[in-house]
Length: 318
Image 1 (cartoon, rainbow, N blue to C red):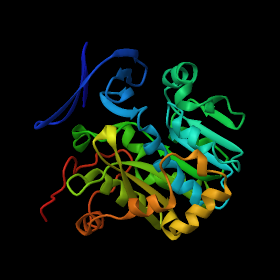
Image 2: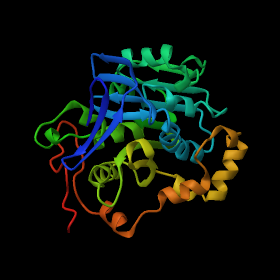
Image 3: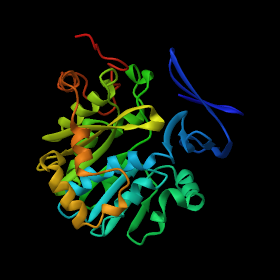
Image 4: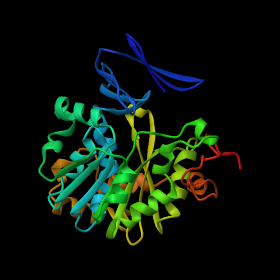
């Protein structure tokens, strides 16, 4: 949880850990129809986007997060032409997708028009003109509603939602859960082209904090036959962040580092990627033995219109 006052931004982890950042200035602060948004400048890590008291992106290292989210799925697809992005209001996910010359249509769906409008017109150094690319189509509606109505079949679907789970969701259903449910992932699957791939940002993934990621892993596995977990360290998050890619026919786990590098070169991406590489991705998929075992344990699968029941912590001692 982020607490932002006049001089300091306080990043509250738990009752035993609190990080302080000196605030240089507040660039933008607004309560939109859907969420509380603040963009602040911190001397330590630069511009930081905070949504509903959670740090979402820091300009210093957002490329690590967004390259890790986007490129495993995009590179794994033989010829991505149509791509759907759910969320990603600042436009950085869209920016990464549009690095592929094969992309003919990139649809970005975000329910918060005010947030998208602000970043589009005031923060071009984040999206690098992605909103104005002729291949871009914006849909400022609910992601599930868009999927239910669209006739497109997408080669890649990237889900970059800001909302995480809360303790209240253990007892009480909240609508955001329907964007993480097995029914929602089945809907995503129905909108994929043959060999299509879904990529999801999937919360913290460490030997001590893996429960939320495991819930998403199990839920996606109920809809897809192949699901791969991977993670990378995000400096501004001070932790390893997890991601998932899912498909029914192929996934990035089948590509060797050499094959990924060949595709990176063939698609003219070598000088467009700051951090991601085939060898780098091999390390992202590697995880400790106990963490691998924990992800395979039975547990919660999210269903439409139901609380998730076992949040926040599963029993890590079993």
